[in-house]
Image 1 (cartoon, rainbow, N blue to C red):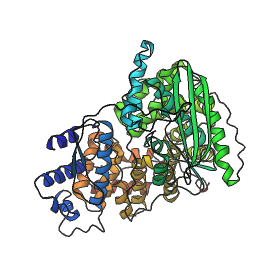
Image 2 (cartoon, rainbow, N blue to C red; image 1 turned 90 degrees about the horizontal axis):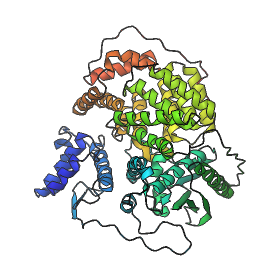
Image 3 (tube, rainbow, N blue to C red; image 1 turned 90 degrees about the vertical axis):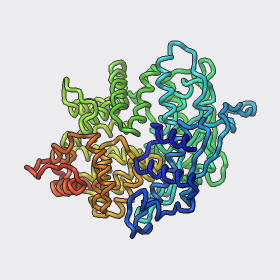
Image 4 (cartoon, one colour; image 1 turned 45 degrees about the horizontal axis):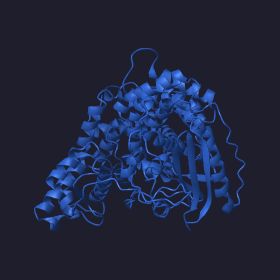
Length: 594
């Protein structure tokens, strides 16, 4: 059991703060020592989290929150790195005493036979079996598919959702009323990573197209990928409270691509619509297949409500190129966005630069390259001293993307972000409002636009936009909770700020640690504040030297910059004394009312 504990703690797939590691060590060692009866919330708070003797769990839910985080981290570990580990360590809900289960040696099960003529995933298929499919033998694709194997593993490894009860200080984000839809990951029924790539790409394309329809509430991609492709739609919808579920599968046979999909009414389990598609196996056909599926799904979902969609899903210049490597590059971008690490940034930048050089009319790749260049500018990821400044490169790439596809959500998001950091705030907000009207269900855009709106001083409207993103995409909740924590702090709602930041976990994202340090210091939790401050300095050591300029580049008002600087000093960070105020471009009074 101790060997298993050491294996978990040492694994890079066990992504938790140090305090959560200490939590796990403590409860395991106490249980092995025969002291399980001592594992109460009060004892853990005092011993592990250094709370004083007056600790009250009603006002400080740290133990409950960290226990929930620890349970999710253990689930993810055993889903990814610990599939074959001999001992399963779990912390059941309702208590803090771990359980230990000896596990049999993992073997690949034989899939259950399917009925003739069906394309449904076999009931016995597991995530482990999906990830262990044999590597394809086509030598021409070997180098490409080596990277795709990692992509698929990361997409599938996003932990299954387990929605714990939120602290009282944080209102529960609910899926908006109306026609709500979850797109489950399309299952690959063929061996080899090429088929898995097509399944992942088709799922992404469907999500992008469906998010354009205002009458639909489509849950976001992180939530989609948190659900195993073979999960039971009924159990999934009970957790996510959606009305409809789109389920699909994909099979590759020679040069033929066969896609089966069906729409399920979550309330009754009835299959409302289903169809099978057969196409030649070429990457550019994925968009036309998706277009056909999306239009029929929209029409079917609309019928119970009597809403008639006159949707014209026109083809644009943004055609996926007839090249597996370039197409996979845009899928790997979302893996980077979930992690926001310098290592992934360097890989994706090189990949996207090659993609746009070979396929200069690929709008999605240009938009993603713009966001990558912007991250070089704002996070100091992998600075490239040669050539134009990264913000200028970001703006040029975003304009190129919108020239190629004026309606693309990623292109409009890239242009809004580049303009914002370029200092053209009013133009950025205008682009954001147009993008919001055209893509009201795109959760990634909602959160980014909400944060930009908030930073200009419209904290309440920004908070509402981010809460909409959280409701549409609970699988990406860590980032959303971090943004909501900052907004709550600026609104002086310190109880909510603490509850929100304790639900975020962005260990490789430097700004998260600065926000966490400020909030912990405000609540007098100085041990946590100093830990987060040290981590921030480790990840972004140059930020504080030009603090006011960095905050001004993010278009915060002088009074808001002063408040953040004061919070950083309170957390023990070496913030320079106030200097000349940097000017930023202001908005017209009506710019944020749309």
